[in-house]
Length: 352
Ligand SMILES: *Cc1c(COP(=O)(O)O)cnc(C)c1O
Image (cartoon, rainbow, N blue to C red; front, top):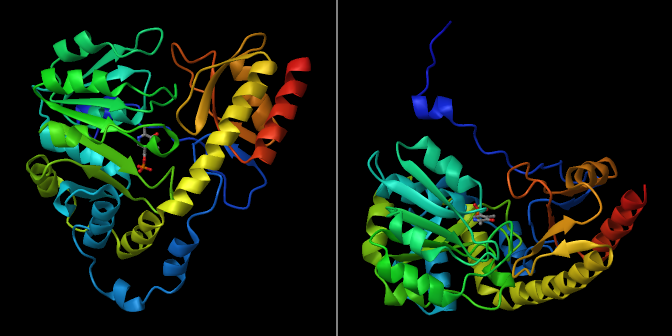
């Protein structure tokens, strides 16, 4: 037997399995990874088309300063309260690396974004997973008692779509000694944000992404908002040029075009209500969602069989083969015509 070249923690981990990504242009209805069905802002695409080669010849600004200033303008916070990442996934990784060692813990309620576990497993840190209550209310006491160096809360959460009430988050922030990271990847489709907490608490960071609300998952741009003291350690740990010049320029234009983003999000929310109602009529249990997807449970059919049946007909949805989720599907809200094809296909599969 050859011995492994890897650290024991790397040997022991399974690694993250991203949702399937068929080649662009493949004739498929893709409702599995919560992308926005609408195109990016025309203003962002114009910046991409007219980009000067000089921008690429040089190294980019190490902090994505143009983008930080656009965030500052839109959210009315100083630009030095913003850290920019190569996707918000990078910021999750940086915060774990900056805040934990082998004596500390990463804590989060489950089910949630699976990547938290993957990123924590790479590092010599402990992971404490605490089950959500059955109604997806936050298990506040157990989360506090777990004493995480970092506690992750996704709100709206994936795959459930529920929003965590700001007062629950406030209570957590008050009682945690470590960092509370509130992952608002889906906030553009929700009715409220926990952003005010960053001004109230030195240990709170809000994480955002351009991947969902801004239709820019391929660009890889995310950002965190927190006081400069909390960000200072993260700046030491991140790659020196983590934001490429293209992402910074295109992302800045997209951030400043709030009107376009809000209109796309409004349309998705209208479609979400319609899709939820239609799925209920088809006999699914549908959880209330503040995100651009729905967690659903077929009452008379097998979830995995439906997932496979849809896939065979060119429709991708997300199926998680894990405790608590194996009888459910997570379905991204698409354009109305895509949702309609999904519903017709599901009805056909359930008749068989
Ligand atoms: C999609 C998603 C992200 C990842 O965002 P990127 O900016 O594309 O890395 C982070 N957190 C949650 C909960 C997500 O669903």
